[in-house]
Amino acid sequence: MTARTPLYSGVIPPVVTPLTADGDIDRASLERVVGHLLDGGVGGLFALGSSGETAYLTPTQQDEVIEVITGAAAGQVPVIVGAIETTTNRAIERAGAAAGLGADAVVATAPFYTRTHGSEIDRHFRDIAAAVDLPLLAYDVPVCVHSKLDPELLLPLAADGVIAGVKDSSGDDGSFRRLAIGARELPGFSLLTGHELVVDAMMLSGADGSVPGLGNVDPHGYVRLYEAAVRGDWETAKAEQDRLVALFDIIRAARPGTASATAAGLGAFKTALMLLGVITTNVMSPPMRSLDAEETATIAACLKRAGLDV
Image (cartoon, rainbow, N blue to C red; front, side, top):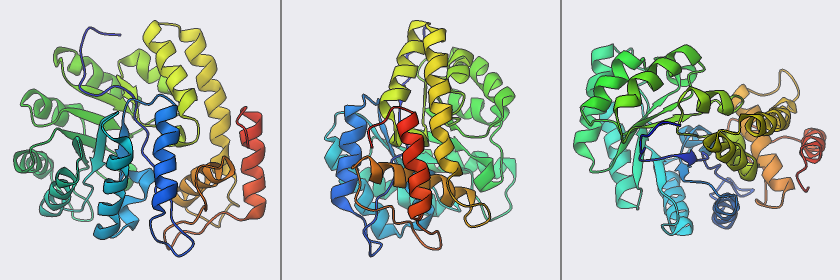
């Protein structure tokens, strides 16, 4: 580990958003998810990320999610909230709402749907940071927004104090390594990996922590991995990562050709949490579908193999 003191570190799961059978926010289940994560020793909570179905929720539902998570967290760990919108003014509006509901920081992607130039992406982050008096993290997720946030864009934003960190879900390990090298001279900068299958490798490359969707299911495992990496116990970190890679097979439970990758992954996380007794239903936002009984049985078997108590 480096001598830097990042603003955010550790395991910061992107909190799933449980729904009732009618598709409303299941507040009681969401509170239990937060308790489950805090019991797991996480270092923060990321509300309204991809695993939180943020793109599927109405603004009213998004506000409700923030309210529940910040209330349940009660200041025990930072709550980082996604202001993930197509364009700058919309992101600023969501960031302002998050700030008013108790968020500790906000996260924004590059603009999407619109065709966007690099200079416009730079201006996008600068305008959001200027409008909201909270730390801003950039979320690099090209599979969803179709723009890659290269180190050449991010490092000047960080040096200028525009962004306080990056959540990297790009899958571009070379770019991540170049970003980590460039961030060594930025003492408060937070470099977080969303690449949940190689957290050990990303920590070795310079990550300050992880934002793993699978961390909803097994926060204890990701915390053990993180703590081993901080100690420099790479053998233990590797063994924990290998176990989590096997657990990640739950995303393969959806029958091929019947669900998007998003629905298969989020549906698996929700189904696992339902089997673990944390949430009440595995209902998904439309047009996604919930996993069925056969798929649920497959996930239950994966959980048992990973040592989790179904």
